[in-house]
Every structure is written in C-alpha cells, then in structure tokens.
Length: 188
Image 1 (cartoon, rainbow, N blue to C red):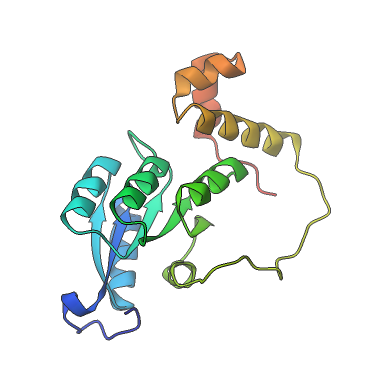
Image 2 (image 1 turned 180 degrees about the horizontal axis):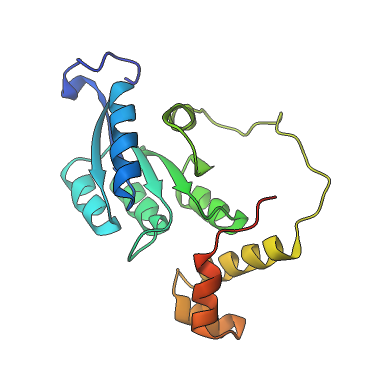
C-alpha cells in the first residue's frame, strides 16, 4: 500500500508504471513516487509501457498524453484490457476538454494538467469515486483561441490522433495543424 516506508520490500509495495517521454521529469517523478512507497517502473513510449505491463500488470499507472508515436490514450485502453482494476491518472501539458473526457471514458480515474507534483498525483491515484462538487464554476466564456484549441483536440480524438486525417476533416493544411498542435492552449 502507498504510505509504507520506502525500505519495504518491493513485493509489499504497490506497483506503479510511470510513462512519460520527458527524461528529466520521469526521473524526478519516479524518485518522488518511490519515496512515497510505490514500486515504480518507467517507460518513455507507449510500446515500452505495454511490454512492461504485459510482464507485470501495475496496480497504478501515471501516463503522459502526448508522446512520440502513439498517444497515452492508446496506452490507457491497453492497460484496461490487461487489468481493468489498474488505477490510471493521465498527465498532460496539452490539457483539453476532449482529451480529458476521452481519458476518463477509456478508464483513467483522473486527469491532471502539468505542471503537477507527486503529492497531487498520489492524491489523484487514491481518489475514490465521484467528482468534487466544491470546484468553483466560472462565469466567463472561453476565449476564441481556447475554443479553437478545444475543437482541434476533439477532432484529433475523433481521428485517433491521426494528424493528416484531422487536417483533412478541419479543411486545414497539415503543417498549419502541426504548428497549432505544437503550441500550448491559452490558459483560462
């Protein structure tokens, strides 16, 4: 269980698969989660994570959304096929409503926008059921830039992350779409 001393034997600690393509972030977060009592294994790609999960299905997983190759959404689906009891938190620096909804529909229990720290991740992993009714409701509408970002993300999810198909659906040049995807969404 989380919260056990880091000296506890690995077989007594909860297993956690951390998947992120950012080497420095992955290394720092793995160390922080290890100190919080998890037996952490790491991967930098969806393919490497699937191999690790097939060898030992993790009790917990922390998955980045945007990685080279397949997205973290594909990994959520694969982890759920391997073990529907795996508790998954999705992390992303490219937060959008469409990807958050898709991550939850595929089986993630929580969705966090980067930057976030190990304590926030542990809290999300251990959160039980339901939402948080104490979250304030903002009265201001989204900006045009944010609405565009959300629309692009929704269409990208509909096309399983295929940029070329998404560009065709949006009637936009592929390079223009790639440029827009490379930018972070406006904060609101």
